[in-house]
Length: 214
Ligand code: GAR
Image (cartoon, rainbow, N blue to C red; front, side, top):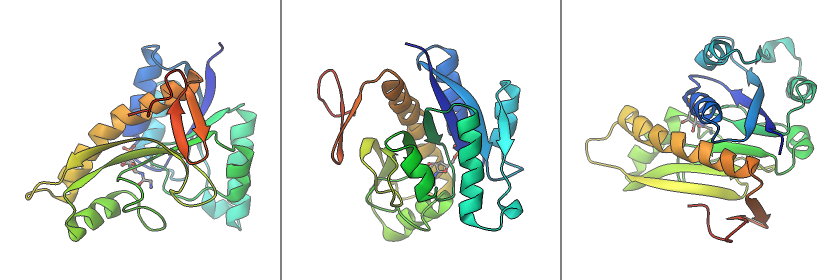
């Protein structure tokens, strides 16, 4: 099978992008990143992409008069780079319905909490970990899911949990959860690229054994 052409969308540090690059380099993922797109010019992930000779593109929201126009620009970059799978690796904007529709069941997102907790509008990055601490839950974690028209509502591919300890801070939780993310996201992308994920309504299974991905 030829490698799946992947477009990675980022907004920041790009540690999840790095985890993907590493697993593609070792041959574990049958994929090829044909473009990395950032909505922030100063995103460190763009530098990571350039370091690995990947096509890195900044799409400026300020150059577009509407969100629709901005998303159409992103869609055009994805199409021009023949992207077959979109991976949202710390992309902190909401994709328009038009993009989600064009890539139906072909967009994977990583979220830094156990969906359906601490997700949806306004829950992104450190805000999620702050909300977890404020609520006092004993477990948090990471979720990988397909993207649908809602915010963080699509079918869940995999989840992993980690304990919230008494002395945890936003930073310590972020580190613990990122550690999980760097395992979960490449694993899900590997399964997708191998054609091993089956979506059955809201449920996602590994094809060969019909088991949960976890
Ligand atoms: C990650 O924790 C990711 O789960 C989160 O942003 C961080 C990006 O880190 N994404 C969201 O909050 C999306 N709702 P990274 O740039 O180092 O990969």
